[in-house]
Image (cartoon, rainbow, N blue to C red; front, side):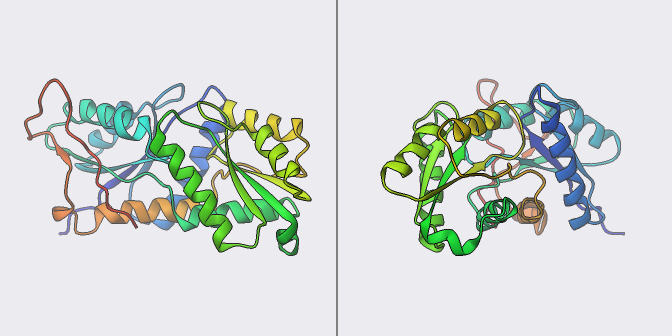
Length: 274
């Protein structure tokens, strides 16, 4: 009898805004459809339940001994590099015989750009208007230079591969420019129509700040957040597959039989990309 496939834990940030957890739950449901036979659950770093350790313990108690933990993050910043590896290492140390692998973050990936395009179309924006339309790619923001550079590269690549007359990055926190400033800059450059595309997964404080900036500066179009888009579910399934297929030789992982220095837990990140 073959061993069951590894379980998948979607690791979300969490928010005081109940829409955040509801969105993660909807995404979880979509991923389950794409991965029949795989146990798919969600855990949160803060605010919402279950917490990541609690979710791992539940999976373990129900028989899961191999678990892929997928950060629901669009860039590799502090949470992906530090918070999540530490939480997973601490939790796995209390699960004898368990193996926990941290998958790569969701972004960047063409499926995310496809989701952004579809959200813009949902607002009624006609693709034929692209040559006269500038896009503000509005993300949550980060103090991590690598994460900021990734957002800038996503904007450049999106502009290069589509017909938008401009795509500019903006940030809700920790970095500049803010959404309103990016909208105004496009207007100053003579762009006739400006659309704001939130590059965030779920509603909450920072997405609300993006929306407020779009309204303040008079953007013509404000797209919804990415949410439980089918493209995100497909991407989550791809990230899972990268660590679950041929999992015996996939590189760095954490097992509870490994020795770990007390000062700093080992990396749980596999840099395998789909």
